[in-house]
Image (tube, rainbow, N blue to C red; front, top):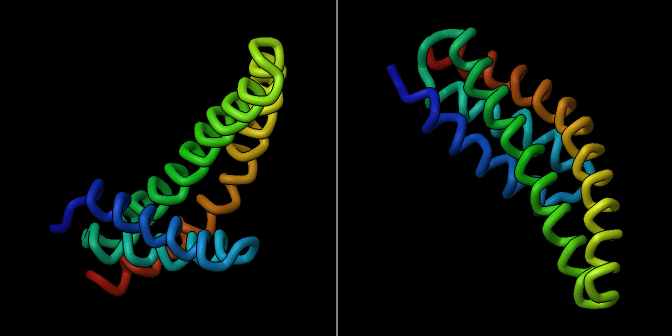
Length: 122
């Protein structure tokens, strides 16, 4: 039996790298490939592979949401002071919520990839 969390982490890294290399479409393709890698490393069948793929996909969305909030607060604070930082925090929060909602699609692609990877690793 492989490690579920190691598979999810490696799958997340693969998703992150492919999403960075190919903006736009790369997140879905990276999600599928990252989920496949996560499922293959998790080694426990389809359910365990799908769970590892889902975790890999959802981690990406959560981390992107956190980075969006932090990045927009930094930009607002540098350009507009305290009030600019507050308004950009609200904008970052909105962008973060949208990123989490869109991460559901990446998590679905990662789950399907993990399902296939877990099936082939068995």
